[in-house]
Image (cartoon, rainbow, N blue to C red; front, side):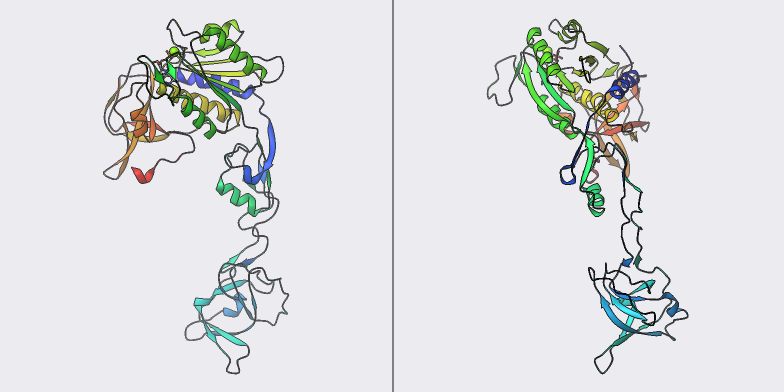
Length: 425
Ligand code: AMP
Ligand code: MG
């Protein structure tokens, strides 16, 4: 049995040897995809100086000394709206009316808001003027060329996950295609002759519904994987080996199994993989739940090996395997930094098993205005109901049989990139 940190180090080392492929896709299909390279700004945004307000474009120096008692009068020559062609004015023009987003003509260097001037309409109905009663500094209400993005500036770094917000930036820069990692192809295989499909109406004694496959499928898609297949087999070694052989031939990147990795008579996965020439990178980690977790790989004659994560069958053990083993594997695979925990005070002294790092279902809560984390009742690895109540995972260190109230502990969201439901605390 190895420690959690050693397991993560081995996962990272295998992931780094993997050579993920990339592809170019349209920006509008890129939600959730991961950049393979830094995306640099090809142009300045804004691409021209423009007005941040509806008001009047002026020269700052014309307002030197302006005050309530001694306002400056400027005559207004013209009007510019967003989208209008940029006009070159002669230098004797003192002001024009300007709308938000309209290009600021070269001769002006400031905009005064419409609310901050007194408009003087000429009696003849012709041109009008404005009165300004304070000094307007240079750049006032001007959005400068390149103020948001300069040419060559990094817009998204390699490893960044493209979201609606990044699409806003890329769209503004005219970047309509992005280079992203090809989705890793994953197959999910549940083992156990007790498992029946979720549609099964009445359960025979001894049978259970497969509650984990759908969790893994959904959570894995959230990680950016393409799910090739979701299958269930009984405890049959031959059928299992055939499945692995097919995964090898079909160039599956990652096979995730559930069940059959413990010490029971029907826990056949490790011996079967050894017979197939697999390298067992680790089997059994000092954690709770999920101690029997397995990480292995099988070489192919060409290309990347088949990566195998063997999750113990209990649903929460599978969830921990996904969240704290598979997720770091994918992050390393995408060249992302390891996820950072939140450090939060524990709400009450909590017991834990000695010598096992614990990943417990937890809730972030507010206590007298402070954020605390509570480890939920029902940490047994078969108990799903507390997971549904949970809004986070709390991690307890390996050493010790309890963690004291107010001690700071590591907290992670249920799935990566998820914000805690602050509104729900
Ligand atoms: P195993 O790891 O195969 O020894 O299974 C451990 C426990 O998890 C047993 O009680 C199994 O019945 C249960 N189990 C295995 N696979 C699943 C699954 N896909 N969904 C729900 N429970 C499961
Ligand atoms: Mg089993």
